[in-house]
Figure 1 (cartoon, chains in turn blue, green):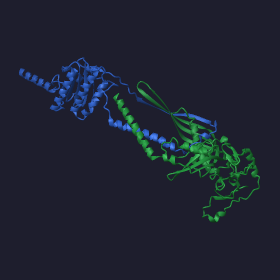
Figure 2: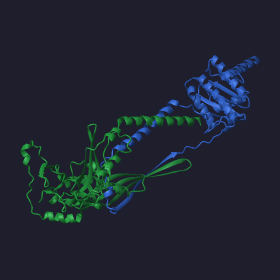
Figure 3: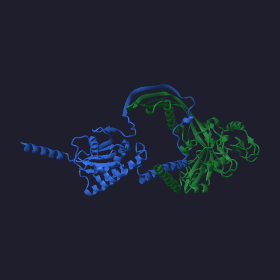
Amino acid sequence: MIKKCTSILMLLLLCLTMALPVFAAKTGSRLVDNADYLTDAEEAVLRNQLDEISARQEMDVVVVTIPALYGEDITAFADDYYDENSYREDGILLLISDFDRQWAISTAGAAIPAFTDAGQEYLVSQFIDSLSDGQYSAAFETYAELCDEFLSQAKSGTPYDRGALPKEPFHAISSLLISFGIGLLAALITTGVMKGKLKTVHAQAAAAQYVQPGSLNITEARDMFLFRQVHRQKRETQKSGGSSTHMSSSGRSHGGSKGSF
Amino acid sequence: MAVLQEYKCPCCGGAIAFDSGAQKMVCPYCDTEFEMEVLAAYDTALKEEPTEEMNWENSGGSQWQEGEAEGLCTYVCKSCGGEIVAEETTAATACPYCGNPVVLMGRLAGSLKPDLVIPFKLDKKAAKAALKEHFSGKRLLPKIFKDENHIDEIKGIYVPFWLFDASADARIRYRAIRVRKWSDHHFDYTETSHFSVTRGGTLAFSNVPVDGSAKMTDDLMESIEPFDLSEAVDFQTAYLAGYLADKYDVDSEQSMQRANERIRKSTEDAFAATVQGYMTVMPEASGIRLQKGSVKYALLPVWLLNTSWNGQSYTFAMNGQTGKMVGDLPVDKAAYNRWLFGLTGAIGMVLYAASWLLWLL
């Protein structure tokens, strides 16, 4: 009987460890690729990059991928993962759930003001396309580089925020095309005016100058209201800058955002 | 009735002509000036002369090809006896041999007698100066056109015009829209109110001019408008001396068409201007009745200048009263392309540099 109980207990324990492989991942590691997105070589490169940035910025920059959420809320999962895996007080974690096609960012400590809501929106916009296309290595590399940039910017005292986001690269060709397009339009108008000066013979459409002064006599003037249409459109609420926060299950304050890819 | 009318100077017998500067008849030989009132009396005296047969001779008929003489008439100059060939519509011209101004009275008699005339106020010199001015400040005018330009012909001509008085009785219905916008905390509202607007009433026009000469293009004559008809005087043939003049060959019934179009448009404009306080106003139905007023026949002063360039002839017209000069000019294609590409390049470069600087900031 005792033997049976022990074996059942052993089985249960085994089941538990098997069912939660996510929690069994390497603790404290800055790259946890449980969804197996990256090759070993890619993993090594990215881990080095994350470690180097984390060491230099004195904040943890973490990437975690999981196969599925199994119904858990992705934000809570990300927050808890950060809290429970002995990372530093300050850091940022990017969580990707493969099955759910969802992503979440969780920030903690000094990383909360460094990654403002608008900043995170911008950060994600820079790698979401690579993520959707399955170019995970490129996406994570962009993420790591931008985290580095964001943290350096935050150290200067003014973190990237609404109205003060990183500069888009200068689009030389489209600027050139637009500039010369406007140039051509302006030149056509100017030369059109110059051409118009050469043509002075025009038939007169009206005879306004031959109206007898004061002869306009309006005897009937009726303005009849017919009907009215009201159209309403929802207002775009003006978002303010800064970082919004929430509590994780452990009672710690986190910043963050989530979405699908 | 005299067929040809020359005004002889009572002083020296020379042929006298109307002088636009002095606004009098002036003898070019002895410089004697004559008041127009005197000539009005002179006109009356002329009319009292015994009537003559219309003795213009179509004598050269056999020498003309079939149809060639149609529309041409010959007269004998009273001064030198030379033969003056004139078009059927010519009312005043000059003898090609002795240069004396002559007026063909038959063309201005009876129902053909104009009611009004605006005497020339500007002379040939002013017309030439105005043409020069007309060429200036036009960057796309071929330089060679300006440099080579010589005036082939310059003539002061009294152009026959019909002046229409009319009253327009209109009732126009519009669909008008008024838009009001406001917002609350959650929504932006746009309210579009539709109205049916009706305007009825009358509008009077006086002296709407339409040129009665088929030779003159309508748009050229409309381009030199307006003429100040307050300066018009009762017609006297003496004003025509020294200038060319045509009689009308498009009658008032035909010309009325054109006047009506313009009156209709102006009436619509004037009524539409009374519909105010709306964002858009679209006419839905328009009923305009024109009540015919009087029609006057007037001779109005026009300087015509002709020039040719590259095998093409260019006609310019100047209002002989106000000096307004019009006439289409050729475009220098090379200069046009230079300007077009030059401006595109310059503006494009500036904008590109500005966008780059803006990005740097």
